[in-house]
Length: 370
Ligand SMILES: *Cc1c(COP(=O)(O)O)cnc(C)c1O
Image 1 (spheres, rainbow, N blue to C red):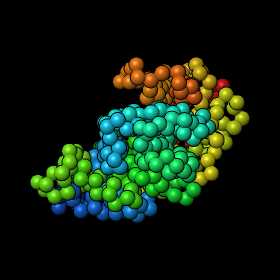
Image 2: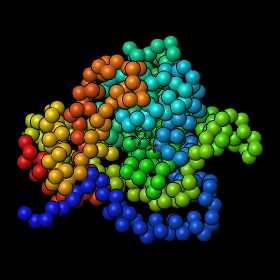
Image 3: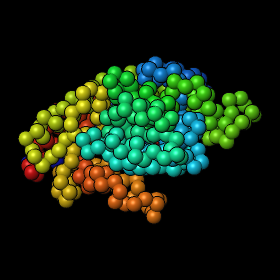
């Protein structure tokens, strides 16, 4: 056998190599003007992303987590309010609800889409419910049409967690443009990833936008005129400048990811023991490509891939409601689909630069396992 080649779950190096010249010149531009906080690139990046996402306002912040907390608070969510969300997500989705002073109420997920189960949302609505926080997990848009209908009926706000879905669309509309607000993350490994932490709030609501701008800068829009308790949570000028470079390529990168995903789906068609999620009509941007493998076998497959130099990850091995921080607060068995999928999911290498050759190696190794 030829010497083993490492195939990472995400190949960021190739991305940086391709864009290096543009990134270097963006960096130099910021070094030259020296406006490191709220410099001109923050404003232009906000304009470009608002335009790209089809929203009236885009507000750069320090992280995706901060984007969620600030968007929730700006939408009027606070102490004692209940927010309906999914437990099958990165902890920050639930953490942000608590940090805004509210209470996460977890409902189960749909095993085909990994997203919040539409049939179960209404049963979770109480007098205290103020919002729904759907997560477009793995880059697959949640069923926003129905979610907005339910929200309207019960007078709830909808805050979309778009951390994994930059560029994903639902019935032609960008994620982050359909709810009352959206929250994006620019963590380096996200589909639009920066070079450190960063985030963005999107909204069409002028009041939510104004309050978000206030909250990100110590609760003030004017210096020494602090009106509410806020945060120090601005998007760095340097990050905005570098993200502008990447934004121009995000469509092509997402398109490449989709092609990788379709090849996986086709390759695994004949293997009964692998369940790929059902093909959505269009706008999935495959932040992750996640298969389901019977409990027990999943860990053996992950182990084999690791030994063969192939990256894979379990997103997420422990659902939010079972995390130590919530100990004693939720019935561990009340989300059976979520609990089962946490033992079945495995995310495979994917990215704009995964070559067909390397992908074939991944596919062959997986086929050999079964
Ligand atoms: C990454 C992520 C976040 C948090 O974003 P950060 O920028 O890391 O704070 C929130 N929700 C989901 C679903 C994520 O994947």
